[in-house]
Length: 262
Image 1 (cartoon, one colour):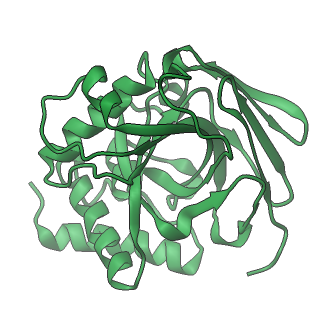
Image 2 (cartoon, one colour):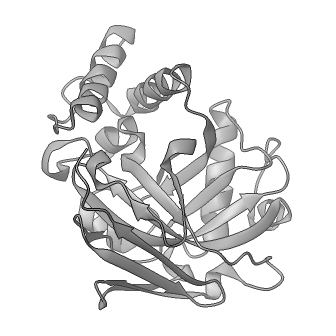
């Protein structure tokens, strides 16, 4: 077991990479899986102390295709902050990113707390106000995406930015498990998938997150945005790229990666 000294050392390595916009070595030489969320929480607390506001969570590693891509075998989650949020059609600040990849997801917006388990798909569905199409831009502070589970969890589940689509639909209108997704970059289809590719059902992913978050003493709250996890393989992107994802029943969500300098 590692102590707080190791947690702080790993957290500072990741925070420095984010500040300096230079990737760093993995942190698995410092911590194990048991300490990874403590590292994540340390850096999120520092961001909040600097004025950032938590607005929800992102679930990661829910798609078998993504797990194969990254060589991990279980889901994780990270914290969404207000400065990560963008709207449909926005130009994204490429200078804030190191080695971005994009994926299409179902986004849940909660109308009620999810604090008291046990949780299943039916219980979490009752807390969902509406769902939206979303793009998540994942970004690793770790050089060449050389990550294990401990590395990505410590690095806030490789969170970068996210974009919410304009359409809002209730679960009476759209069943997340039944949607299909096509993601294109610069007009070329690059990734496809379905709601069932996200842990069998994005609501299953939400139930997993609700359980895990409550066990860690930080339950989901009304108003939170929750990104379900990718519906298909993630795609590398760069400045100037135009990305569009269409999810049946939820419409299209678009973003452009800006070419501006920092």
